[in-house]
Image (cartoon, rainbow, N blue to C red; front, side, top):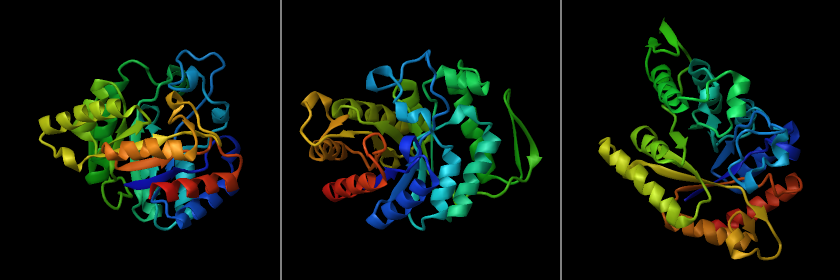
Length: 301
């Protein structure tokens, strides 16, 4: 089991100083990976409820740094940790530009990139970038084809109803094809993970639900003649850490370090390969975030 940390990116942590400090010190502490998320805007009257927290977007996310820029700074301030996205909203970006941006991060970091993609949940964000909300799953499938073509072939050519790449050289290539993780919870998304991805980006679901969804991923991999044992579960936890025990029904979204660690331990026993801790909602400042991170790391190892 590996333990990663969500790097400084939003709210009070959206600064160069915080990003540099947390990147350097978390690597020194022994975290194996650093991760970014992707948020564009916070509508005053959203069309779609936020998936968690009673449907309301956390106020801290009103300030949210660009994920590619954050990964680039993290790459420049670390030497060994893997750098990942949990998750980029794939359909917002023309895939040729996304391929170049991600390959650049991989190139500048010495081959440490892990690509995490999802479809997002906000139709307001899709409207803001001029991308249709409808048929977004098909658009993701096509984007995955473009990424694979650009990263693994030379010269590159591609054409469908969305994009046309004339035979071209597109460099740099990643040091190796980056591990690709996909987010999603509905059956179609889980089957896509089994068919196309190296792993599943998930959240702190009840363990029985987690294992039932993972069974769908594994079955889809088997149907596609892929080895299900080669796939990974990467679980992101965004806890509010309390000093006194929370009600059992609030865990793992809220609770003491011990309560949250107990849940994460049960998730690992159920098959989770990597945990991402996002402490930006609960930490007061950089020092508090790093102290909490060290406490979790010591309890989980």
